[in-house]
Image (cartoon, rainbow, N blue to C red):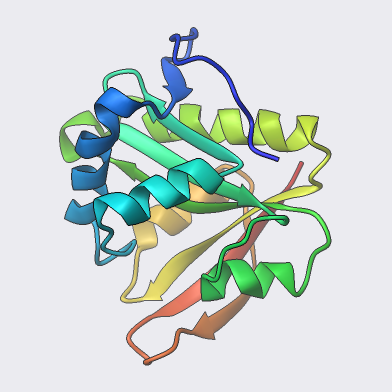
Length: 169
């Protein structure tokens, strides 16, 4: 069940993704298509609308999309978790604009996910991180948040190998 709220800024500066910023956030997503996946406007809108959480910073320099186990989502990474866990919140994508890095945005976005997952009694927050091509900065960040690696897979087509990570909540 998606979490709903108004786009008012809380103390962390995290708000629900809202209309005026969607084009900016889509462009930010597509700047990082190698790590995420390239989306068009309708595809981005579908993800936002079906997400358990669709969050952004108030200044639209960072965003996060997360799904719970009830999502109708065919990502091979999401499906990996779905076959293993009855309850979870899956962070599908998180991205912070280069000019906004180091300001705590990713941590604030994750804090919002942890709180929502705990409130929903999801049991765990999960994600995947690229192992090949490597993303050591993301691995260090997630491990510092308490994530541990629980598996890995070579994605269809063999272009990427990902590690699967979880953090209990």
